[in-house]
Image (cartoon, rainbow, N blue to C red; front, side, top):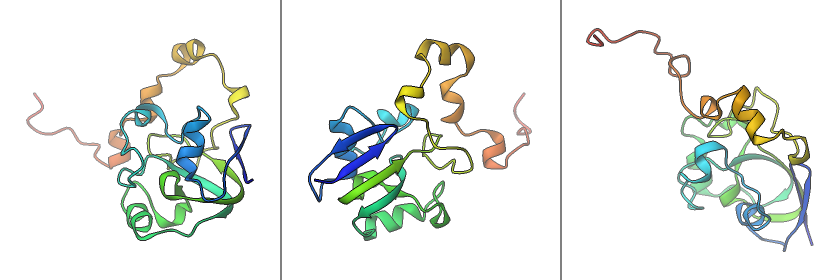
Length: 148
């Protein structure tokens, strides 16, 4: 049986299982922030389950290739959609920050054992900060003229 390594956890699954289902069945998620609720539930439309995968997995299908060409994704990110990826052997999966999981310039999320208490995190940072686009993200740093 293949083993999926994700955030310090090891999950055994059947060969050919969909990576998203494997993670969700283990009470883990390939989503960040609001995307844990606001996602396409495995249809490959939203792109919020993007993860980096090393190991034996299925090839990208046309739906996955198409979605990964649309911003905020980019082919150079070398990410896969967990909902479209079949586990064919042992794999290591990394999830990056941000609602879309595309902040590949930052380190991947830490193992679950390294996470701090949710209350401490809420006091230190706003979890929505990484989920919402800012003017810097869109390149729009001008206030509209009618914003009185």
